[in-house]
Image 1 (cartoon, rainbow, N blue to C red):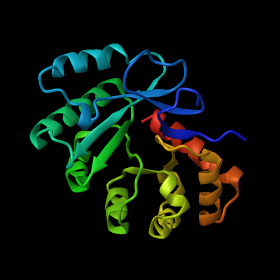
Image 2: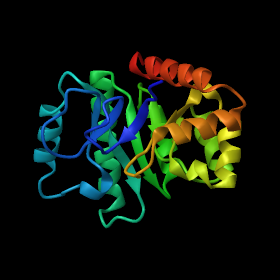
Image 3: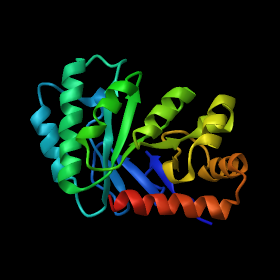
Length: 207
């Protein structure tokens, strides 16, 4: 059985969404966006021009984009760049893969601006944040931490199957391990879990 890797940085994984940060787009699904840490205030228009030029046939989503309290870029500029990418996603009707560090409630405030599905990638925070994100119709994508983080495992148990994805991000492990763990936590078969993930993909692809 093939398992879809919702967000990864490895060009050899074809069954998933590759995060394109530079270079030529692959011939399998990828996302493209301006990460908060990559914002270049002196060359912002060139960055957006590059982004648009790379949004070709296999572009599945906009991202990573979002807000990060730990990067040096001014918060107001981060918000402006994030909003512009939300507007692009609305225009081209593609889901948005969000990078967020300690700015979840600010990200939630942008939800009303988006007409497209929004997915928090690599979710690994507290139960209350998860509940608030889900209440605002975000999807949560979980990664390697689910294999060992007990509180995150509890969040996975309580996250609706129609609101979750699974990913390796830039970690070196087999995505099948994660699917196996989540199927155990949810009390369903690997086949059923895989079906739900693929249904979710169809849902976000079609807005």
